[in-house]
Amino acid sequence: MTRYEVAIVGGGPAGSALAWLMARSGASVLLLDDGRHRPSAPRETLLAAAEAGLQRAGLWQFAAAAALPDAFQHGAIWGSDELVWREPGQNGLLLQRGAFDEALRIAANAEGVVRIDGARVQTIDASGEALTFVAADGRSHTIACDRLVLATGRRPRSDLVPLQERHRGPETAAFSLCGTSETASHTAVVEAVPQGWWWWIGDGEGGGAATLLCCMQEVAECGARPLLAAALAAARGPVAQLRDPRLVHATRATARVVETTANVLLCGDAAATIDPLASQGVEKALAAADHAAAVLRTARDHPAWWPTLREQHARWERGLFAAHAQTSQAFLARETRFVEAPFWRRRLVAASPPPPVPRERLQVAAEVVESEVFVRAGDQFAPVAGARHTTTGDAMSHIGYVPVVPVLRAFAQPRTLAEATAFAGHDARLFVLPPQVVYAAAVVLHQQGWLKGAPSGATSH
Ligand SMILES: Cc1cc2nc3c(=O)[nH]c(=O)nc-3n(C[C@H](O)[C@H](O)[C@H](O)COP(=O)(O)OP(=O)(O)OC[C@H]3O[C@@H](n4cnc5c(N)ncnc54)[C@H](O)[C@@H]3O)c2cc1C
Image (cartoon, rainbow, N blue to C red):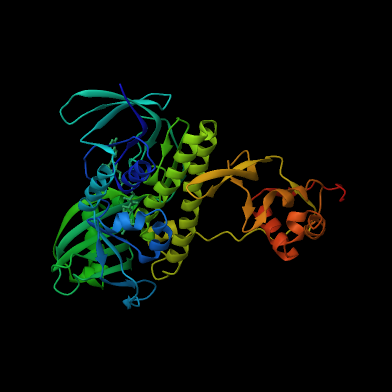
């Protein structure tokens, strides 16, 4: 049986980038892809803002070599009937999915990754150290590995490993139409309509693709074609100018977070699928590969840390998902013209205000324990003092630059925020910080449920 240090199932942006990074770190890597191209949309963009974050690991260059510069004019019809063009700035990348993914796999292969296309994974051993797959020629193979990664995209494979859904957004469907457009083939525009929102992206050659993101329940109630017809009739921007539209693709696009108890790492959309409104799924897939590579490199040197590092990666995916969900909510809330339409009604949930700053005495919640947590140190992770919430699995070492442990210790006895901030100054790590920053960190700990109101009658110290 052939043994690899890392076996990766799924050769999309997350899987290919991780394979490439691990091969560059000297690991023997197997990359299995089933070769069933399932594009999200015919064309996608990687925003220029992603460059700074991806450059350090070489991932921007990795993606840029497989893509075209995005010289399209970008705009939005959102919150008003007017098409507002974005100021021209630095170019992002234009991704012709399919060709882009194939170029990434070729680059990984050139770096020494063993690439097998058309592979159908049949079973994953409960140990996470072996899998069987059927190759394109119909023959079955079993391979062994030290670490197994699933980067299989947003369609979960619960037949391979147990999966638990941790968060799920409103059920969303995506329908892509292709056609011709004399005027808009060099543009990319998002447009809100009562049925959802359109993502128009030209092909630079007299045509383009319009993808409608809409409510799955409404599709079930009205039928896809009538809903598409209504959304086309409501469009005012480039989608309204689309000629001879033909349906080329339909997919689920529901945002969700999935976790597993199996001894495997979930990476990219397989772990967390963000709302397509962010236009950052590929960026997140590449950043997830960077994070997962650091996890795998650390586990290679410290195998005993593997379970904690695996949890760390799941937490990272979850944290990024939560941040994206907040940004998408804020963007959705800027559209106020269609609040009664089902798509918008199901998504425009009123943000609950943060709890008021408490005046009573607080103490550390019973579920919070001090424990080592890992922080990124170059290409690997290193353990530092921190704390963990045993129910949510959340863990942290710092809030901004404030170390969490001494702040929690200031609430080992019931204290008000002001009392604890004054007490915390006795610890050298907090003495050097402005008291208002320590106070603000304690407020955050309270908002996250790490500090709770002390029972009445508790005395302060
Ligand atoms: C409508 C829409 C528009 C979008 N537009 C954008 C955009 O403009 N910009 C952007 O950044 N993001 C966009 N996204 C999100 C983006 O497409 C995804 O986030 C991104 O592709 C995730 O990459 P991934 O590698 O995790 O998964 P995927 O790209 O899904 O790759 C998974 C790979 O695994 C393979 N696979 C699956 N199962 C198996 C198996 N059992 N065995 C072997 N191989 C398997 C698949 O064939 C595929 O090659 C959009 C999404 C949607 C729905």
